[in-house]
Each structure stands twice: as C-alpha cells, then as structure tokens.
Length: 214
Length: 153
Image 1 (cartoon, rainbow over the protein chains, first blue to last red):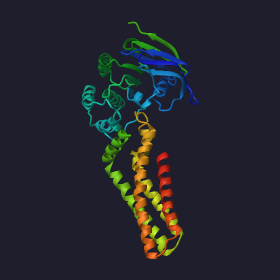
Image 2 (cartoon, rainbow over the protein chains, first blue to last red):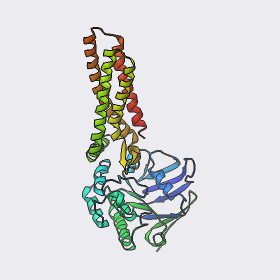
Image 3 (cartoon, rainbow over the protein chains, first blue to last red):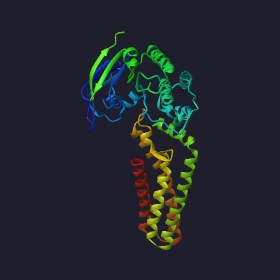
Image 4 (cartoon, each protein chain N blue to C red):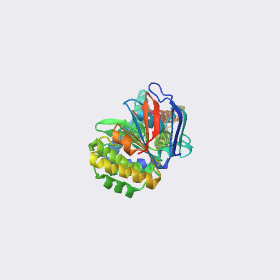
C-alpha cells in the first residue's frame, strides 16, 4: 500500500476528521468527493500539517508519516489554491528558491512540465489565473517526483480541452513513477471515469470508498 | 539547516533592495547606540544608557527582520507561514536565524568591549559598571533578537 489511513480522527478544536480509514496502492487515482466543508481539504491538511493533530495512523510507503515528517513532505506533491508560493516572483524564481528543500529536484523536468502545461516559466505567480496556478503547482510537484500527489480541486478552472491532456499527464505520472494521486473534485466525469477509486466524505467521515469498475 | 541557509542566500539575492534598506536602518541604529554608549560614560548620564539599549535592540531587529518576513503586495507575511508546506522544520529555520543573532552578538560585543576599554583609558578608572554595561548590551540584543525570531509578526 502506498497510502494507508487507519481510524484517523482529528484532535483540533472545531471541525475535524472522524474515523477515516482507507488505503491506496501505488499506481492508482482516487477521487474524493463531498459537499463543501465535508472534510476533503481537511484530510489533505491533516497529512501535510507539521504538527500531528490526529489520533490513528497514517502510513506513506510503509512508514508512519510523522517519524520524519520533512521527508514525508518531500514525497508528497500538493496542488491547491491554499498552497503558498511567492506571488511577486515568477514561476521559475519560485522554483529556484524553493527547490533547495527537495533532494530529488530536477530543474529540467520543471521546465519541461511547464512547457507541457503550456505555461511560461516567467509568468508572475500572483498574476496567474486559477487554472494556470494549478498547472504551475503541478509542474513544480512533478519536478521532485513525489510518491503521492494531493490535488485539491486542481481541475476546476481548467479549460475542458486542457483537462483531457491533464488526465493523460496524471496517467503517465502513475505509470512511470508508480505514484498515486488523490484528487478532490466536484466534476462528475472525474468521479465516474477518471478515477480508479472514489470516496465520498460527509461531515468529516469517509462514508463511501469503492473501486470504480468501468 | 544547510537547506535553510541556501534558501536565505537565494532569497537575499532576490530581495537585495529590501535587505539593503534594512541594512542601512540597522547601521543607523547601531551607530546611534554606540554613540549613546560613549556619551553615557563621558557625560555620566545613566539615562543615555537606556536610549543606547533601545537603539542597539532596534539594530538587531533590523538585522534579522528581512530573514523573517516577506513583503507581498504591501503586506508582511512571516517566513514560517510562507514555508508552511515545504519539507523544512520550523525549528531549523529558527536555528539558522539564531546563528545570525549569535554572529551579530559576537561582533557587537567586540565593539562594545573596545568602547569600554577606550572609556576606561580616558577616565583612568575601571568600575564594575563598565562590565555590567557590556553584559546589559548583550542581554538586550539577545532578548530583542529572540523575540523577533519567535514572533516575527
């Protein structure tokens, strides 16, 4: 199993996850759906947060994520509107600055990925549209070849033509890198046809998790 | 920690104008503080020591500040928030800034000790207050620096 969540319950005050359990093998795409506020982004932040704020266990590639959380973060690619980059710098300047934190960083891969996404590396991050920002973050993540991609509404804001290419990029990532992808989405097509597994969250619980048989 | 230092070097290059402005401010307060230190002993007015300490405290804050905040569209965002999702520990960022503070304290202690030697030579007498003053400067600089590192906003 690449990712395993066992009875993960948030301990933060206010809204929290409630007994979330699922596993995802390497090389598969899982789509997580649910109403706004259901806990999809909270699940991602629970994995990424530098402070452990849950009970239960989360394993990435067989290792508990908090044993060496910095190493865990270097193996996860996070694409979200809530991700933080230097808005006053270009995509390339952001990449040069932040790549120091990633051992596996490949600058050429970043530039090639930006080209595949149809985005200029010199575009200022603060001036990107939502769709462009998601593409940049995807290219950034691909440059350090994470094992797990967490895509938070990444395709919302992408034009339908590019969205098809984007799914091809995702499929090639999981095929070549044996990575796994969890994406949150409200797009029906993604739920039914693009994912290998789908889950539905409601009020912090994973109420449904199944394999999509197409 | 090496990654944090590499990041700082690149960030300083990227924000060279901001770092220059903070540097100018730092040296203005540093010179003022050292001048007031001399005046404290020459004029014998203890209250000048308070102003000297304030100036030296500000000089260390201005020394560390560009490493602790990011300017974005007129807003100041603390560096820990900017690197929230990066694979780097907050403690490592703290430790590197603490190293910068230590280096600043080392340099300032040399200058203040030299100042006190000059004061003693000119006055012809050594008082315990001369030593106490050096300790006072280091405590003020260290406290100002630590507060700045832990609470950059």
